[in-house]
Image (cartoon, rainbow, N blue to C red; front, top):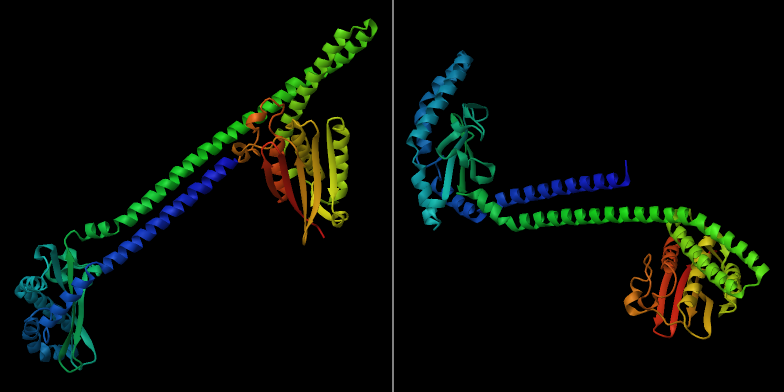
Length: 466
């Protein structure tokens, strides 16, 4: 599986998990809002309802209905319990149904509920209710109860009065269970449910800001992911094209350049015979341009083959290696510039971990950068190695060139980036790109200090290895 596919799979999985978490959060908030919805109103309705049925059941007169049917049957039921248990159970069921029918028939709770709502100064047209009988049982000894009627909230038979659609756990206003632990008594459990019309709509409106914010956040994440992936894929393709181009340049140009070099040497040998001064001058121009092309191609090869994973970290004496690197630069530039290496005595025998080739590239690029973009009559490069207490080196490489423009400082380390006022100088703009990446690979610190028309100082902070 390609890297892009893996990233896309991880991103999509993470996005799905995010959506599921958001849905879970919204669901939890909705449930909380359901419980909190009309909390104050329900408390007031509960108080008014329970006060209206003190010493009664379900609604005013409900207890009398139950007793009128049940009390005359206690003696008969008790006798059946011992003589014919099967007939006893059937009789209980018949009595339960008879009581249920009678309670529903004589229920006039709508008037009572409307009075409660009106007395609480609530809008009568917005509220609905349900009076629900959960259980009815009797006892002969006050200990063991025998069920006459028992349902759960999913059974519509339990509705004594009102609208079954209101029978939902979140709509419970009052839940009452009444029992008297005495001989020939009964147990009854019932509930009052109440809700407001368009309750779901009202709850959704209450959590609308959360829904809007959550949805907007998800859309923003999707949009940013899309833009990021599109730009990343585009950049990857550009990098692949760039690499292919450099490989093509290397392949197509190296062979002709080699041929030109050999031909130039042969031509110089031929000119020795005829002593043609004009030919020498033209040949020198040809050789310089060949060298220029060769250098540009080599830089292109370097950037296409630059592999951070190939770094070989080893323990080195930093000052010793710097001395060798600077010595090579001094020999190369001895006719054009003064290059000086200074170091504090405390740094002479101290070690550091780094890739020697990369350190050479870093220092050489900074030195050549300071000379290439320098119009001073006496070009100078000063390399200082300082000891930073307690365990750091600092390499300072300064020049007396014309500095780096403010507008260029933020992007001077980018690939193929060159200062605005140095376009006429040769190069691909890769030197400082290599410097920045080498510092990053080693986890060193790089600082830049530059003054226009006075010069630039690069500071690299390197940990000392014990």
